[in-house]
Length: 113
Length: 113
Image 1 (cartoon, rainbow over the protein chains, first blue to last red):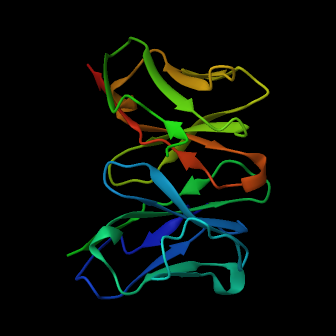
Image 2: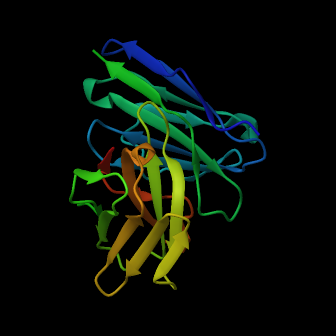
């Protein structure tokens, strides 16, 4: 069984540019989550999809961040325009319905210069 | 304000000895607790969990203890092995926010041969 796949593994962009991160969850997992870790800090929740619907987006920092999960399969997280403080590692995770344990991807490291 | 705290950023232990990683939480509504292990350039990997109705859960070399009155949990690894060297994250959730895990900042464990 393939795990959670994230792309790109690392992205370096300039302030003001746009970046789109992609996450492919484990096949059949209805729950998909985005988390972010800024260097040395805790891993913070961003949002939660159940299939294609946003169940909880209380962790999204501001309206420069847009997450989608069309068709309830893969998800994208777009940052537009990127700011310096957006730098960090963005993790995607997925789980089955009713499961408390999340399976994480390897993360997408974003560096904004 | 951090709801899950891991006050030791690092811990060094000799191979074969016990490693004890600590975690404190403030939210009495948390009812499920998890430990994740993270190697560099990889995503967090689930290690062990415990429900708030229990005070101990054991899986091989790993045991998690929960003290609800003190709002404290700990992860014991015995015997410690060099391959256990990683960053360990404590996480908590409540049943009403499935998957919205609240993480601590992590403790970097180094097991020396």
